[in-house]
Length: 475
Image 1 (cartoon, helix red, strand yellow):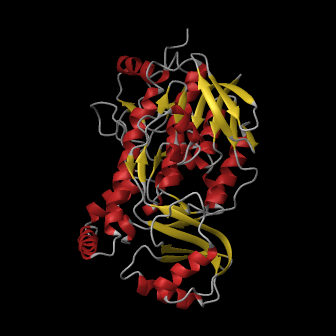
Image 2 (cartoon, rainbow, N blue to C red):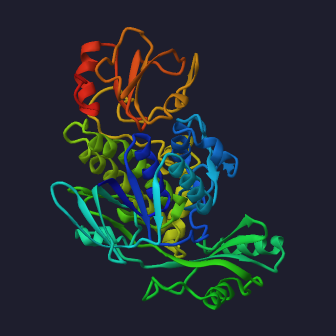
Image 3 (cartoon, rainbow, N blue to C red):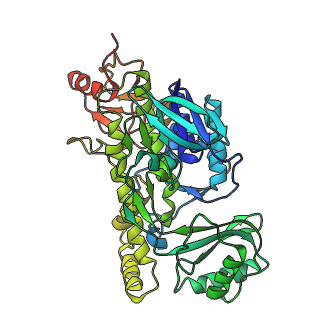
């Protein structure tokens, strides 16, 4: 029997597969496409996702093919300077096409031993007390202990589960095209700047090698969103807004994006879970979608691995929904609010002007930046120290950096007292005695996802907390 089947070979599914393999879980990724699409789609990693890659020793791979950027207060495309004091050792985003992100995560998952099966489309499933039976479109059946649906906004897994997906339907739609142009880049930039004075949903971004990502509002939501727009439809919308189609040619990819906003009512039903777009869809404003999915996987991976290994304490797997559902809801709220500010009507313009003024306040700018980049995420782990529930940024130690110690995906006790012990949990938690001038608590217990589960210096207090996240002590 397979331990975990992951449906969907996008960034969320691949990240989850890699996380599970860190703990020796037998994982099979089912991807219905026979080959990668080559479509760029999402174009960047926010700060928290950059940290995630660093925590797993992957950041150098991403830095070698991506471009750092700093865009503070990019709420509703309102650009402000990067704020001071953002709580991270990585104060930047990383511009990188989704195709490259998927390639790097595929390489990582395969290196760790994940099995990726392409051309495998899930058709049906059923679950019982012992596992999940999956039926593929070709009639093949597979059996696993758990199944995770990472199969996108039209998730087959979610539909088969019967999980509600309430929210707002699409009211507006945007066409995206990765194309070459005959117009001079300076002309394209000048026309784009003029149009954006009244229509901020229009844009043209250089992608390299003569290709531009051009974004233009559609006439309205398509009746059938599963059908891609035609190249002629794309050019016609350019002529409507710009008076020219810029001589676009050689399209790499033409697609449509709606502003629908929906969230699954539950992220877990028995042995089946949902992550990424299968659990939530929202407008692409501020580029949070891919990042939200990767962070879902980062939260879920170690918890599901603990269930498979048999040491998970009661409620650990349910904490995935408890922690990630509110974060998904916050992103939906944020993107809905930004959608209002992106409107072309007088009221939207007035609100946009007001928000632009508010973002000139450093504290507001920093709050918005930390919210969108997920640096400000704090899980509800109860009352206590201000660090409790927050992820700990990478900090310098006398013998290196914190994130260098987290590549294996285990828990970590950073002990500045030298008096504490994790005896009984050494198979799940690393004990590091070291000192950092950036940490003002005696000791901190970090979960495998880097969030702080405990701070203090009392051994008995620590012993009372360890079972909550890492199960019973080894006999």
